[in-house]
Amino acid sequence: MTKHPKNTGMQIFTFIWIGQIISLIGSQLSNFALGVWVYQKTGSVTQFSLISLFTSLPIVLISPVAGTLIDQFPRRWVMVFSDLGAGITTGIIAFLLANGDLTFWHICICVGISSCFSAIQWPAYTSASSLLVQQEDLARANGMLQIGEAIGSLVAPMLGGLLLLFFDINGIIFIDFASFIFAFSILLLVPFPKQYIDRHRAEKTPWFKEASYGLVYLFKRRGLFALLLFFAINNFLVAIVQILITPLVLSFGSATDLGTILTLGGVGMLTSSVIISTMKTRLHLILSIFTFKLLGGISIICVGFYKHIPLLALTAFLFFFGLPIINSSSQIIFQKKIPCNVQGRVFATIGAISNGSQPFAYTFAGPLADKIFEPLMTLNGLLAESIGKIIGVGQGRGIALMFIVIGILTILVTIIAYQYKPLRLLEKRLPDALVQDN
Image (cartoon, rainbow, N blue to C red):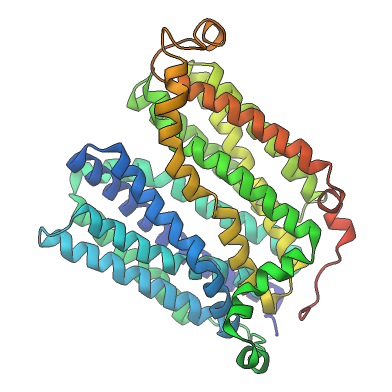
């Protein structure tokens, strides 16, 4: 494997990053518009949640196969293939919509197929950054990746709501399709460094061993595997929060209040992403992860206790401020400890396991709230005379109790993880990887 000179590699990465940001905004715009379209057509929260399930589940199922594909072919062409596939599915939605044939299940199938391509695209994109930039620039590159996600989270809801005032959903789908073309063109035009691909080993290794390679690799390195499990558990808890924040806020506030809270969260995410991208690699990355996970747990607890919108907006800012730091710190650790020639398979496994808990959260969050926690916090509920005197009773207070429980669990999981030495001392005990380390 060869790398471009430092400045050239960072410039190429920046061009690709710009294309991917535009594509991400386009995708989130269409996701926002399709969600509004489904809810307006059906009035069903369950069907609205099913879209999230169809979006997340294929990523978990396809990732092991995706990792094998990424390591057997040049990263540029893998990204081109995945962008092309996602663009085609967007075009199918646009065609069905224009002909008046689009149904809820068409959307589920299309977002599921698009997620399969995302399962290929994201680990290829992440591992390409290791290929393009020097180690000392990984923090900056990962900060830029977090900026891209923050911009998408901040811009898409506001811009999507504004565009729907002037265009119908067809116009937004067209914008999404144009964004794919833009990202696709950049990938075709920019030069990539030569990439080492062990084709001799790839041809002789059975398929199931290729697919399981990432899991075996991580399992042999206890610190990395512990970090992965830590994120899988936390992602499950955060996914429940993401699903239930809307009904919680709307139980005592307006849609404008919800928009204010989410916007402040996006500002927090963007602020820390900019800070990360302008600083050198931080020391004590593991400590940064634990510190901001604790802050996140405290923030979630506060959301359950209080109904004051300005305070909740501040809490959202702090919670989302920590996410890019947590994500970039973990990504830098994985990029430093895992050699480039196997990052496709290992990163795909990381994505499958860390995100594998999210479909379960999307499936169980609603029933847990409706069937268990909400009845506990009704006026005559079992906990009305105890916890109800502290956080209140009535609609949404059961969800508030769930937030308190989730916040406490987040703190406990973080404290327990910190006690595990291979994880706490991961940066010191596990040396940085060589280019080829099998």
